Image 1: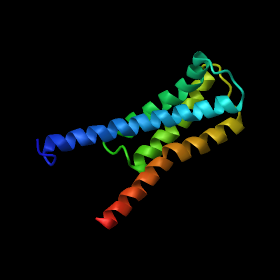
Image 2: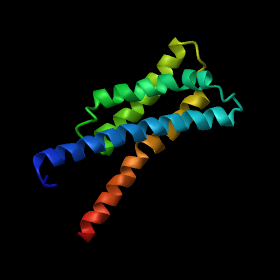
Image 3: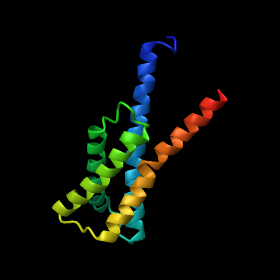
Length: 135
């Protein structure tokens, strides 16, 4: 099959969507792992899952709200909306589930998830621009 055919373009697009979603999930989980490690919390899978689920759900809602599958690499709206949803809904779900939410944790969460979820998209955009200049 010719790589310039419409079906090949759809497959490539689907690959980008899946890759972007996986990168977002991996970065949210990395944030949780770093946080649990820095606070000497156990490596138990159940503790990790309890800490992670609010942020994972928040990021998933952000993907849905931003229609992230349309422009998965876009800083705006996808990256910003996924980031804000992960932070805001993540914190609200933590409160609703009886987990702690201190101001310092909210600030660190907002900064780290912002760097992670918006930052990788900004780097990808820069790389795409540099490649376009060369070609």
